[in-house]
Image 1 (cartoon, one colour):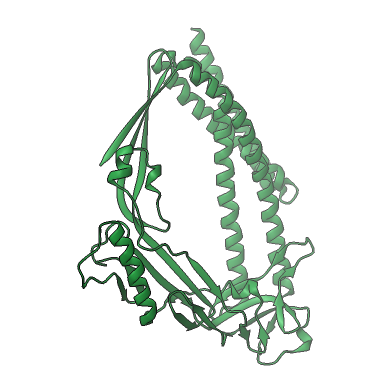
Image 2 (cartoon, rainbow, N blue to C red):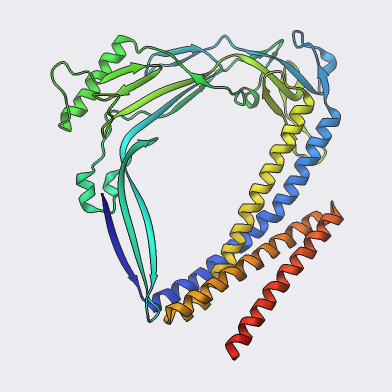
Length: 405
């Protein structure tokens, strides 16, 4: 089922909006430029930290005894992370000996999705057609159907939940690593979560039966006298009449746990625990891997992660620079939109110019950031940026010459 909403924006309102867009574009351009420059410095500083840590790290082969000779040193150690803590989720009566216990909740709900199409109109106006569709799917949060755009859908596709339960994460407070105790930063970094197999205690199950049954009765969805609304299977609690055929309002709760496991750590020894390594540039470093992983592999992994972050931030920064420039020069396309074809052509040209200038500007920022550290790379990037600016300038000259003919 779907619902369409058609909105018309006049030529005058579009011009005013484009002027506002210029201001937004300037702010976006400035912030994105800062992020691009900052990211290059962050990457270099983190690379220096990893390099310094790699040179300083020593092997701790035996963690069964707290050796005072390692005090204050950055060590690489492998062993088993153990805990005697019993983690409890009293709401569902789940108890397990684990480093982490996590409750995950999903609700079967109507979800509103949108698709927008824009049409330029003669005279400079614009028609926006928004299509709203409504689908049933599992959602991590209850969906408020009162906010649906389609007023009929608010009634026809009304949401409710049989029981509202929050996600929850519980960590063990005392996790040992041989003769040492792991600090929170390392405890919380231990992964390899697995599903928890459990059964609801009967008193808790009976209480939920009453609560869920009461909600379904109020909603007119209750079953017969012998209906059951709480089901458990393979570590999942299901609230609803039929787990194999979910209906609006149903909820399912599952648990995962992180059990004691073999881990590898790179961190500084502080008494009988560990701390981050602080490099000469004041950046900090520590690393945790699952299993028995060599120091070389862990440092290589840290370098790879740093590189991924670097390229992600580069891509995001360059994209927002381009968007900022496009918003800044946007009024040109709007002014020409009196005739849709001409407006579209100028709009496409503006987008291309924004792309070329945005990439060039991004490369210039990156080049200046790297000139201090890698002159050859910085110089190469500046050369590429000059080429892109030249192409953008020549394209503008050619378009101007064609318009003058």
